[in-house]
Image 1: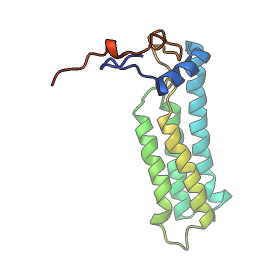
Image 2: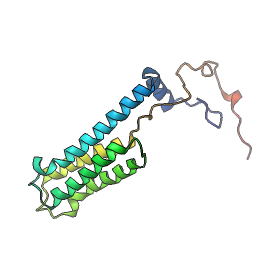
Image 3: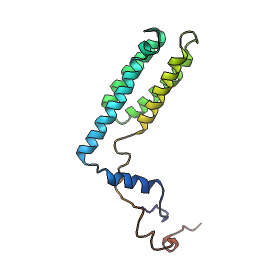
Image 4: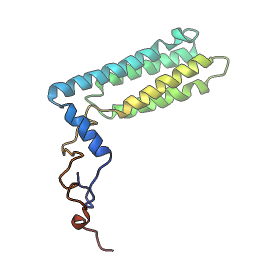
Amino acid sequence: MTLSSGVQHCGIGVMTSVIGRAMSTTDRNLRAITVGLALFRAFIGLLLGVMPWVVGSGLDGYGATNLGCAVAIVAAATQMHRAPWLRWVQASLAMAVLFLPFAFSADDVSAGQVYYAAMIGLMLIVSSIVTPTIFHDSERTSASDSSRSDGSNTSNVNTPSN
């Protein structure tokens, strides 16, 4: 892949093109990836929803807040393929999950709840970044590009004048 400056790009583009070539992104595969991401995000929301009973003390104030965030995450996860802006909603909910334990007193939130919230929040942040077409590139590149085997690419570089 050649950048707009004429420089040959050989970093992450080559790696993602190799991954992309290994996995064909037909409509069926893209649908399977989309459904898999939605199920994973909904599963994370369900993990957050059961947190008050797994590591907490039931449905107290902090547990009810987590349950509300979990419902919002599951609702967003099921519609994220239609409205990509919901990834931003999920990222903001992830930040809320990460910092919510510190909004309550230390007597109300145990250390296990803080660790659990940190684990769920980080998984939510990472999954909000991932899209079904993250490795899909319309212009394929390879490590054995013909322009790279010609030696130096300096003759093809057009440097703009100052």
